[in-house]
Image (tube, rainbow, N blue to C red):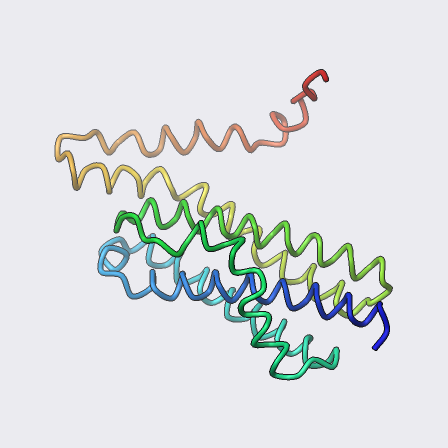
Length: 195
């Protein structure tokens, strides 16, 4: 096996490990009673679950096409788990807002990992893997943005469960305020910090 093939298998295997571990955590969330009680959160977490299953399946197929057998797939499931383990392995709370926060963090790791895989595949002249990474990245990024938009409403529901007098009407204001930080006008005006 050439260095190029070995490198590609390693990167695809690592990506599969990140996706698989994230999928396992989201599968636990889908069955959560707390999630079932919040219809918007349930829909969002179900969407995340669906996309992660699609992405994982496509990575498994690509890894097999690159000549990796079942042992490589099993190795993939363990090779990068440590990177995501801190995000998911310990369920600190049943609060749906915390689940979505952890999903946001994990999906951000998935997104940057796909960016790395896409770049690696382009550098190694593997158009199939590069296209796959980009396609899967494009499925992840809308989910990250959707969590960002949905989290204020979920947070106020969690807060209200603990403090019934909490003002839930602030969810729209919080969403508007925080989405402004993601607006292209704001992002394009941010200057680099001096060194």
